[in-house]
Length: 100
Length: 532
Image (tube, rainbow over all chains, first blue to last red; front, side, top):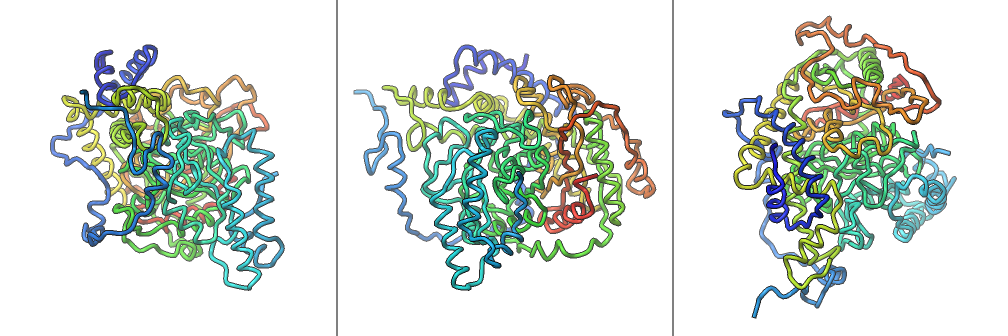
């Protein structure tokens, strides 16, 4: 077994994700099978391979992607707040996080 | 009735005043009203926005002004691409009421070129899936084979074009989500190189892999749409400054005996024999077109799915952290902030998304990062190297798009790994960042018995995870006479029915080699590829 029930609980906690009891075991079993499959990567010796995070590095110089650091108007605040679950313009309201 | 509209004949009809943009729009909405309840391919329509744009085009025509390249062309947009003022749900309950305050660059460019946006199309939740069955708003039916899936994740965008409910559409591709539904619905579907099209306004799944691209009924139209949306955008720092060639001009050029690679690893065990037969007939057609066919090796192909599902889920777990019930979308109230986060995410995300968040968080977590995420990135480098090596020998690579034809609705939903394995031929190009197109390559008979699965007739209902054992005789690139054996057809005696299932052939090109990919696909289409 690659992943235990405790692992899934720990990861769900890291991801702030409530899982129902039934989901816990289903996902554990499915992810276990996926990790088992992923284990085939160990057939490859990658000790001398540089990890690849993205594909553009060799195709484009960073100069082309950098711009002047200028302030530009962005008048969408009202629009954005209008669709928030609990707006109190100009703020988003959330449950209290500081205990008295 | 299926619409036969293409970009060119829309242009002709409008310029010749045979129909107005407003009338054409009404005609499409009438068809959508009639067929969408059955297909479930559109999630929302945008009639006001569409009418405003159609009126703009009609007034250009009335005043004899020059028309922009996509004037009056009705298009559909996948619901992971932001549209200002129109709900963009990503096929998720967590964004059920989300209204973006801005347009994606691709959408903005389509409208600036005169296209009329009809509405938003159904898709797998956050583009995670290969069948469109992971949408919170129900599955989409394949318009070509109604008891089959349309493919995914851009199932709705493929279905509306195949059903004549849009002339073209935008989808997104992270591991095959444009190409595979294009294959399943029998239409051309193009993914440009990573960086070719701005991702600004595309709601992120896996940022190093996500790409926007077109569906159309003809390769020429796919080229015209790509032309419109491609090019540098200051809002996306990964969009490239590389020049966008004139794709339509390139299409018209004759083929100059291009060298085409057939990677042995893509013809291994696990492919449905009827798909194989069509792909081999397609390859034979390329030979007839004067292409030089070479068998090549891409030795890390077999590891692509494993690397892809590490990288894609890791990036997804990070990208989807933004759905916390604070700024937009669903909030499940609680007195505690952290409990509000947990409840909102637990209730708002569907099963596949939760599974990927858990897997992605796990492969990034302390103690597992090196074993999984870092390993996945290293194998990604090896797969990209396979492509670089291949493109020193050949101009393009031909493969099947999918190892199986469209499968039945519900057939694969209970086994996520099996669903992932169906992406085997598409994820490689995603990881390497190269452009790829799926072009129709014949149709096969669906088995008459609706209870038996079309894909179960291959090597096994669950196809083998091993692609290392090829059915093709081993030959080297240097052996020029080797292509004969690639063209041998293997007939499988199967019962027939009136329903035909489309097969798609995939063409990969080197980075920013879209023009060559489109040119080959166009030549193939013109030579009768869709009927091989």
